[in-house]
Amino acid sequence: MTGWIVIFLILLLNFLAAGHALMYKRDPRTAWGWIVTCLLIPTVGPVLYFLLGINRIRTRARKLKGEALILKSGRSSTYLEKYTPDNYLFSPDHGQSAMDNLSQAISNRPLLGGNKVQVLFNGNEAYPDMLESINKARKNIYLATFIFETNKTGHRFIQALGAARKRGIDVRVMLDGIGEYYSWPKAGRYLKRAKVPFTRFLPPRLIPLSPFINLRNHRKMLIVDDKIAYTGGMNIGDRHIVDELKGTGARDIQFKLAGPVVSQMKDVFMEDWSFCKGIHLPTIENRNSFDTTGSDACRIITVGPNQDIDKLRMLFTGMVSQARKKIFIMTPYFLPSHELVGAIQVAALKGVEVNIVLPAKNNLPYVHWATQNMLWEILQYRVNVYYQPPPFSHSKLFVIDEAYSIIGSANMDPRSLRLNFEMVAEIYSKDLARELIEHFEDRVSKSKRITLADVDSRSVPVRLRDSICWLFSPYL
Image (cartoon, one colour):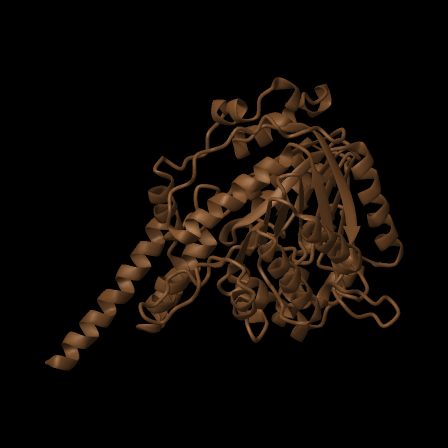
């Protein structure tokens, strides 16, 4: 009799978990995946769904912010009041007004003029500049990173942060709870030893068991004295020191921003810091003291599985649909949503030149294999796809019509589109777009163009491998 009770409880657990996935998962593929997992793998399936499939972040964020977390449309009076006077606001020309309206509705943040954006290639250029800013800081230093390696580069940053703390600077470091384990010993140990205040974003735990393992903070930012900020795809560590002759390291691009947009980045950091600490947000200070330093117009957009869910998918899809001449995409992980694939196909059919640059050798082979399985969907519409040779490129760039760019931490894969907390910056700047396109063209000149024939000529075993990896793409 006891055995039958156990079997009944197991079946009940399986069906309850499958029912929850059916009702609350928005993506049909993801829902089907979890339903099958829950029904076909007794006990283990529901446990995996409990740990990886349920989004509890939205409820917790709502409690901390004390307000409804919904996607608002139209102009945000809250942000427009924060960023007065009016000359901080940028009015795009007629050709860009639709893009500005879309981003405004998605982000609920205004587009701010008077910024200056500088491109820093690889850790070879970025790290010395970032360390110099830390060493010259007089007021505050806020650093957030997904991976903080404890190798030579990591220790240089820890020493600089510790020295700034000794000078009386307000130093705060935010580490992702899972990303910290990419390096051992963990960075937190050395930060604590250097007396640098830090916090961990949703760290894993066994007692009680953490249900947030699959939801990571992938944002990267360094803010110094509320005047300059750095963002991009670059973590902290030796892996981003590139030796072109030896073919070692991971290529990436970091961006140095100065101007009013730094205040938006600070908002993002403080919200995440408050979330980690479990406290309410501090009162917003007056932001009218930010000086204009250039002619670039910028806006920060946050995405994640909380109130910002699906924003990145809408942003990329909407901007692709607005393109008139050329689209340049560079990303290490390319597993776009159905909507984004459709937008790319339509753009190509309209005569827009679409160029996508991917790494020939990926640090996550299974993502590369899954991508190979779906490339035919865009290659058949004459989209240009290139594989750039090693060293591995971790760069994330999105440029439209030589005037509009999106930079930041986000990839074009399900993890960035739906699971990770990401931050991107959109930039209206012809000068920056030209510089990034020059980088694209340089990489394309060294890359191999992939054709539909290349994809179709894969052997049966390779096709089977790629198809299996693609089947699990919503979880990669």
